[in-house]
Amino acid sequence: MTSPRRALIVIDVQNEYVSGDLPIEFPEVQSSLANIGRAMDAARAAGVPVVVVQNFAPGGSPIFARGSDGAELHPVVASREHDHYVEKSLPSAFTGTDLAEWLTARQIDTLTVAGYMTHNCDASTINHAVHAGLTVEFLHDATGSVPYENSAGFASAEDIHRVFCVVLQSRFAAVASTDEWLAAVKSGVPLERGNIYASNQKARSRNR
Image 1 (tube, helix red, strand yellow):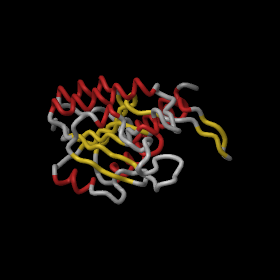
Image 2 (tube, helix red, strand yellow; image 1 turned 60 degrees about the horizontal axis):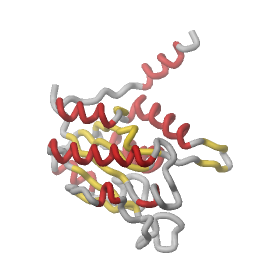
Image 3 (tube, one colour; image 1 turned 120 degrees about the vertical axis):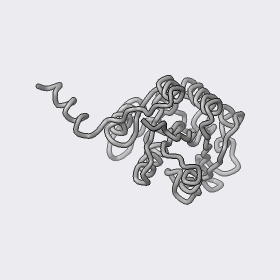
Image 4 (cartoon, rainbow, N blue to C red; image 1 turned 180 degrees about the vertical axis):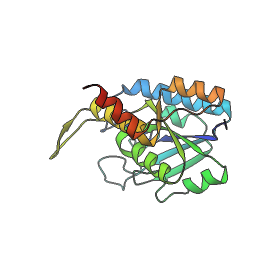
């Protein structure tokens, strides 16, 4: 078994999601922040490169406006070292950035995703990475979601986070806790991703 060549990407851990106007509701934000810090520290100790991503919107935007406190990196991330920095304005950390080239130059084959939000920038980045041929891991307790209500209906933060995690595990990423990931990094083994067929069969067996 070949050990994964991992990079940890920490997406949009910015004040907007903690003390700003888009507060993460599930999992509890202080818990996810602590796990993000643990993952960054473990990556540094294991020689896993860390990529920090920061999202900006134009000045005057209600959230993530360039120059606002909300757009600044949260101290959990800002206080820790990183190997590469990516600035973005769209959900995927690959779009309009040098992320793909940076990973290729270092022969990274496995991208571990943490940060915010589960259903938006994380999912977009994960899908982009899979389509680019990378293996992806997703730390479900080092991320989070917010609730939504619009013309399509209402969904709680917990529902959004839970459903996205199940869907991601079915095809796009190995979804794991930070503790599970730390153990995998220490042992140099990959995490296991599910598949669509097995996920569907297991769900259907509930009604048999």
